[in-house]
Image 1 (cartoon, one colour):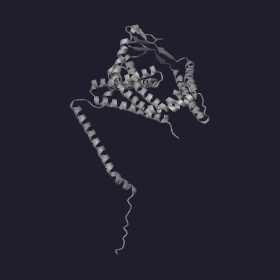
Image 2 (cartoon, helix red, strand yellow; image 1 turned 45 degrees about the horizontal axis):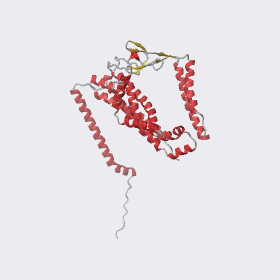
Image 3 (tube, rainbow, N blue to C red; image 1 turned 90 degrees about the vertical axis):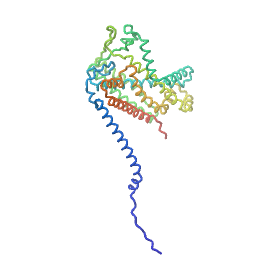
Image 4 (cartoon, helix red, strand yellow; image 1 turned 90 degrees about the horizontal axis):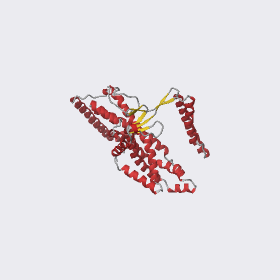
Length: 396
């Protein structure tokens, strides 16, 4: 018999073994990334060559050149002598302003529509259903045109302006309102408001802790409201009312002074709110119908009123279902605001289009559009995802 020979082999290290297993996948990923970078580089070189062949300048140096763009609706002081970059900033602020205001108003209207859809009142439920079906199945662009046409057709001329109250004038040139002008002592009012906000936050947190321990908390909502209203108001009067108003006045065929919401802004705001609220309303309806009916029956058995049941039991649980879908509607609203160019509102896309027409630098401007919309929607999505995580029910 041949003697048994024991061969001593060194064990393969675990890290080396895993590396050999992952090597094909890493190689494939490297090739894919390299191919993408190669294609992107070729596109960049071809674009540069085509631009040079057509004598089109590239780069972002044009942003510092005087624009000469007239812009009617601005949130910051602006004149045509300002640069293209500042004009684009004005358009970006207009986009942010109309989007933020539309999100707030569309949310309020959407909740009302969603609640009406599940109402026991036949007429209210049918009106909610008609609203949702009509607005969801009509293109937003047509809704904007309709709102703009209605505003211009039914509003009077400046000389025959409607005056609902005070120094507010409504006509086909816009809604003219007094513009507040703050004096130096207004800083005390701002400090009082910040202190009231901090005190309200601490008060609500203390009330929540008391409720967790004893089952009963403080009336934090009413106390916080009193602080947020009363403390700044007291500071305002103690500081000698440091605020005046620049009221609009009719001169010739139009108003001067004050502040104005032009028909283009009002039509865009109305169109975005009406259209998006129909989708949010359906999200709210589906969330309400997802709540177990046993909870509603139990609340009724305890003698709770329908309004209290809706506020304290149904709507908090509805958030778990409707927030993810509503996040998509919010981001769609921001992107849909680019349709402002169709009715003449100077948003970021409208001003950027004018810059392209004057400088032929479409690639740079389109890249700026994409970067701004991407940033806005990513920030919005992160905020909504954080809120969604907070309202989720943690099962024990």
